Length: 114
Image (cartoon, rainbow, N blue to C red; front, side, top):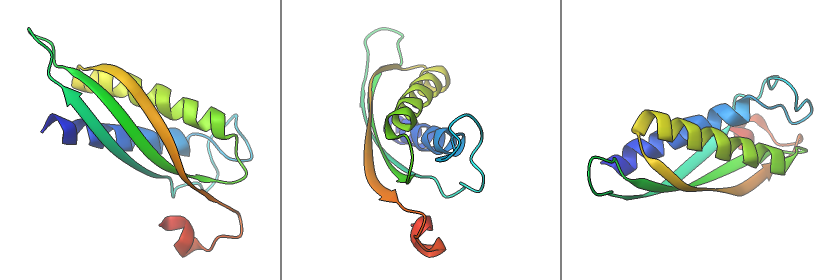
């Protein structure tokens, strides 16, 4: 049960982190970048005592290209870690970000939404 809750939080925060950054304008919100794609796998270990446990999170994302991949991945890691810790009360051991696909500007709307 905790795995699913943490996975939902992680996916939502990864999407929000990607929407917050534009591929062309890394300083501000993304213009029209509403097709952020993220999936999460979570491993939760119960912790003794009153703790809520520890989690290792793996988030897979599709990114628009061109982009600053390292900056986007760092933002996803930061945001997922902060929000899972605050909302689920868990210690985050690791947030691994895997880039599944880079989507170029020539991609059709249907392909970009996948």
